[in-house]
Length: 117
Length: 117
Image 1 (cartoon, chains in turn purple, yellow):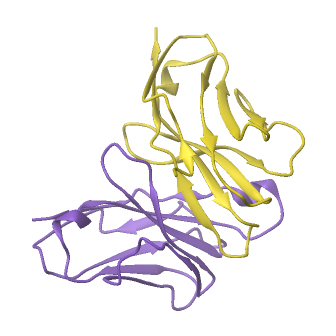
Image 2 (tube, one colour):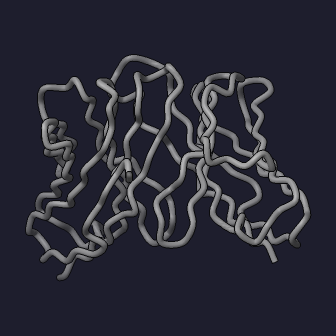
Image 3 (cartoon, helix red, strand yellow):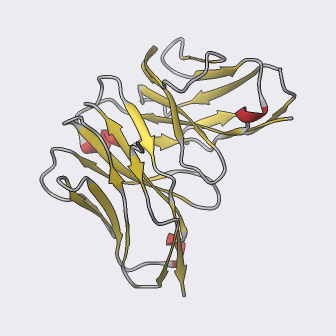
């Protein structure tokens, strides 16, 4: 397994358009996370899945954002009616569920850079 | 209030010297986890070290150690014997709540470390 992959790596869109990003986690990982990172800031937590269940969603997350993980494997993050403020790097991470210290490690993908014109 | 505070926007260290990156956190949960990540200029997030709130010993991973002072709510990262490849952004992060119960994750704003030859 080559790690967490994200597609596309870059996306340029016009304001008002919908965009969808895909994340493929490490195959045996059942936890999946989405983050957003803007320039000069730390990642901002968006949402978290355990298998196909979305267990946590940031209170800051607009209703224009929706995420799915239909079969507990890959996940998609959709942003509807994009705004210029949505321009950021969108990061996906995955981890194992378990009781060991190592299970706390989140493996991050390379990110999708979104630019809204 | 900020959940994670990193007060050092930038730090410099001489190669082979040790450096401490500061992190304080704010939570009322009894169970939480603290993390440090490294983000080189290439952009990928790399997990460095984890400390659980109930862990009595400070976490260590090779040249990285976490100075956990629970009463002061601080989780400083110590890098020993700095190397040129350690130059990067370093983020402190916290998971609130017990692992697996639906968690919120918070990242600090980061510290940019530059190792001087």
